[in-house]
Length: 389
Image (cartoon, rainbow, N blue to C red; front, side, top):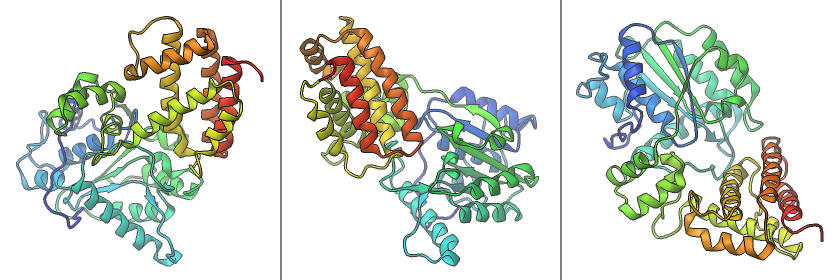
């Protein structure tokens, strides 16, 4: 996986020591299956754990305690330069490329992205700016590579991040079928590791041919420790971001400022509270004005905003119950109290709003126009909070 970038190492796996020990023992006893699906919330370290497992498999000195960390194979793996460790992930489809050249263009984009990730290994877990997918050309190339002999060792490892993007409209059902054929008849020297934050979007036949491994959220203290020790974040910022991160390092990173500007999730959090405020406004036009401000947001890109609106609604429910402990957005307590007082919002009204939010999430999965989704959602929430105009 030589990427041409400088020797910048991956950060260590954090917070999953017990699972790492279990995987090391499974390899040592010969009980590790040829195909794994690591699933869990976005940003908890699924792909990083998968790459560590690749290092474990490719280290000639690995044992029940894990990879040695010192050999050439380990050094190449943590530098993303091992020729038998192949990392695939969703990419934007190159523009203006002829179909005959698509596979080559996607492979170049993959190496370029790996170089970028080496240069900036700590990335917020946020929606991509444009549609991405694991396209048929990528799945076919992966299958071709898997049938070759390992370059330097006895094994080769394929890590496929965000594997659920094999099946969206931007990609192709054929891509999932190409992967399925590889999972049905994997070469004896090959291990395939899929990761997904939405395993339900994968074909059932793909899930059935992999061993599922759940990666749970981290404790907030562990996220805070990572941000301080690995990310170099100030203790105050780390404490705030870890509280908002809900056990996800990648999510917590999204709340941290970037070069003086709010992080991507912090920007969305502000928008989520603006939506909540519009839904409690006596002016019905506020709902439509706020919906139009979303512009050309893609449908699936709306999900992070709805998740943050869900957090805001949860906090409003706590506030409506005249409680203040356990707020996720504790720095917005005054705003939540003002919204509650202005409309005398009852906890039952918030409970009904949650049902409308779940319906909106289902529409997002169905690729409905985002502005229509938000307008409909806010209108229904407003009816619960304010009543019909």
